[in-house]
Length: 305
Picture 1: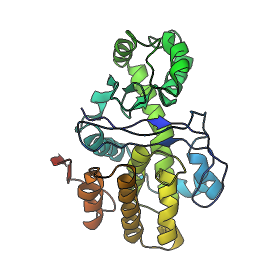
Picture 2 (picture 1 turned 90 degrees about the horizontal axis):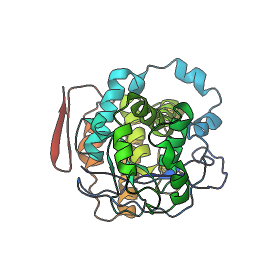
Picture 3 (picture 1 turned 60 degrees about the horizontal axis):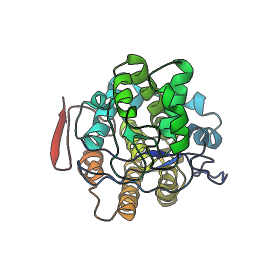
Picture 4 (picture 1 turned 120 degrees about the horizontal axis):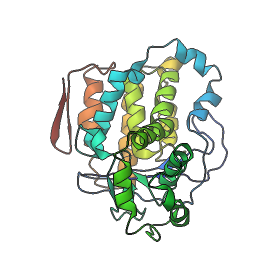
């Protein structure tokens, strides 16, 4: 199973501009193939503000604007499609639910990587997930590892986690409540902020997915290779549709900038999740992300009827 990188909640300077947001998590997926991934992050973990607050700062009436728009990627069928598209790149499968119980140290210096979007013991997000889950479900099978998770946070250490943590994670992942907790954390950190901001930028369903996948891969940080940094750079080169620009032109530029960022982080990285998937949909004019869809990632072909 191909795994990508993990969230890192880092302390960032408070900067408020059209494209830069205060105290958002950073995150990076640097996987090059189905078999490996090696994100590189060094900042200390920090409890961060939800990324969606950046969109709220930029457009205070955002809730009212979004309320009048189509559901887009947030529609149940499209949201399911989004998870399948991401899973084809993250795990080389359309069955994204098969990763709830995944847990492994992939040797990337971030400790254990686990779950559907690669929560990590070394980058604060797995700790946050377990804390939030334990608050709602005291006495769960992972709660006893919270002291150890606090101690290894920000490191690649397994101290206090071995030998039972991986078995406990897999067992807990069989429970609907923990699967729901993973989904909620995914939505809180990635999906909801990405879709919200894409809608405020005037983007349709494909554009909303492009933002979401970039958020998952690059993380909701403000650095030059993180999501908000990429968006800011794209906005310097082209107007978003909400500012009177061409949707196709803006997204094409955003994808160009994203691919460059991927290669900057890791020369030689496989960028097919963009080149033979998202860009293909864009060039086909499928801005609504209508099915059926066919795409390729890492040389494999996927189809959704």
